[in-house]
Image: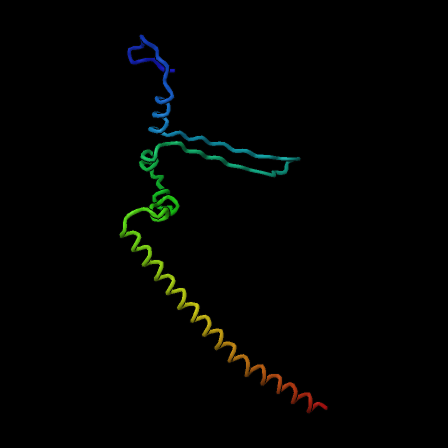
Amino acid sequence: MTQSITGRNPRPDTLADVLERVLDKGVVIAGDIVVNILDIELLSLKLRLFVASAQTAQEMGMDWWTRDEFFTSQATGGGNKNGEVEGKRARAELEAENDQLKERIERLERAIADRELPERSGRSNQSEDTQEEDR
């Protein structure tokens, strides 16, 4: 409860006044919870809560939601047409690159398999030859 500036008429703050002050200035709530049994720490929680308006948070440098795709318009399907076109183009480029890499992996695997087959058959023939000589 606060008093008016003149100090003569005390008036209680309304919920709206308190909420406005909290969002304007911000509030930090911090706490640690630790659960121990026989001096063995089983659980440790560190809680940090910051309550403020988006504008206040941005002024303090806390604007992670502007870069998080969950909160951006492109993730929800909204936004401008240029962003949608660029997003589709980027996706098409990634899919093309992915296909090229898959083809390259298949070629490399085939080359390795082709190289190993003659070596394996040559090794088995050599081991048969040495076994026959030993007899």
